[in-house]
Amino acid sequence: MSSTLITNIGELVTNDPEADDLLGTRPDAALVVDGTQVGWVGPAADAPAADERVDVGGRAVLPGFVDSHSHLVFGGDRAQEFAARMAGTPYAAGGIRTTVAATRAATDEQLTSHVARLVAEMRRQGTTTVEIKSGYGLSVHDEARSLAVARQFTEETTFLGAHVVPEGDPQEYVELVTGPMLDAAKDHARWIDVFCERGAFDADQARAILRAGAAAGLRGRLHANQLTYGEGVRLAAELGLVAVDHCTYLSDADVAALRDSGTIATLLPGVEFSTRQPYPDARRLLDAGVDVALASDCNPGSCFTSSVPFCIALAVREMGMTPAEAVHAATYVGARALDRDDVGALVPGRRADLVVLDAPSHVHLAYRPGVPLVTATWVGGRPT
Ligand code: NIG
Ligand code: FE
Image 1 (cartoon, rainbow, N blue to C red):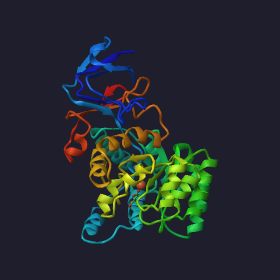
Image 2: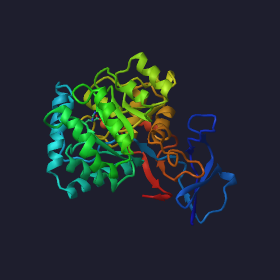
Image 3: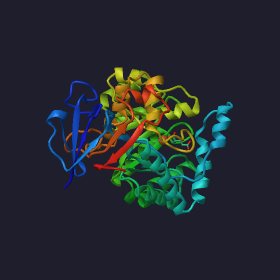
């Protein structure tokens, strides 16, 4: 097993939960990669010998970003819908059906090469773990093949047959999702998700779908309270889900339920940027003791960015997070939102997934928005 010593690190963000500061930041640190994992972290002066040595020239080194929410399997795009929105048309979930038609019309090869392009785009921007949902097939065949495509790129695949009702009777569609569609999807997915929102699925339907998913061995997650107040966030807390995503419209009872259940609120500020809706209030959640993750939600409708650095900058500027909180949310908490303890931190034993920034500290991710600061992304101990 070969080892690599990374030296001359300007600032090392470890996310070590034992550290005094949130990011476990170490000045004058070095890191040794042993094979695919972090082998050693400590003061540069004490660094052990290694087979190779990489001098990062005073740049910051951070854990790779864990993007716990994306919808990368789709055909076509909705640039015209975005342009209309910027001219005043409000965002509506119904636009999903436009992408469903384009996805059904795409070949497996087209879907696969499109996902490959987006995953490469994410890599260049520092994402080392990505969750990918289905949800634009919405037939037994098209959901199964969407997940089979996603599975080629990540272990974190999510069955989102309950995105919207594509056509026909809603109750019959729920029966399809919980029956034949789940059967066809379950071997390709780790998670099951429901868009619980007015115009999509209500809380009773979401409960039934998540229960059926659990019986088939899939873990639950939920899109909730994105466009309106509603019962979704409380349902996620009641079911003890690991994460509930969007959380834009929250009552005090919703915030209390999240705090009491320990369910992570995953905020997706690229959506509010791209829909001109109000941003979720991260500060309120953090001050109440709720854990907050950040993710891209990369999708063709509500938010077509693949950039976690952009989401970090938005979270700091628009949602009241400090740069340290936002970076932690996009790395350590993102990993927890996928129930992963092998990524999200640079401590011995975790996977050596890391980002080298062309900047001296993590603060620059928000301080220099829109600037491509990621100069290298390492996955499993190797630059990619
Ligand atoms: O997470 N909220 C539901 N699904 C996506 C948007 C889907 C679309 O508009 O195509 C989201 O925002
Ligand atoms: Fe989403």
